[in-house]
Image (cartoon, rainbow, N blue to C red; front, top):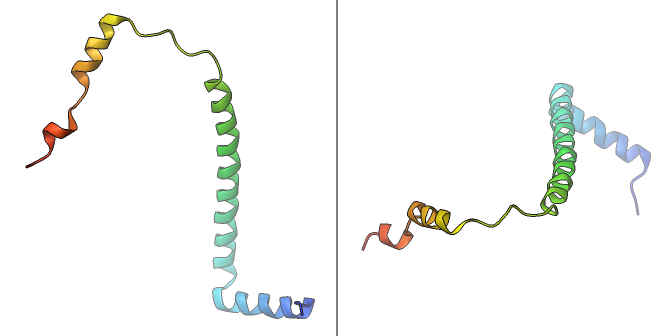
Length: 81
């Protein structure tokens, strides 16, 4: 038991009557923009993954580790008792 072409056309007419053509156009444009954004994100993701596979930056010097330690925040010290 499946849908025939007549069933689909009746369903489409009911949807157009309920939502209207303007709202359907807006939904279509939003959906198209979302798909385009997803595709662009996928392209950026593959480019970032390729960049991450490149050699890493040189290791930090010992002197800069003390600077990084001064900038860290102890979370437990900020909790209220």
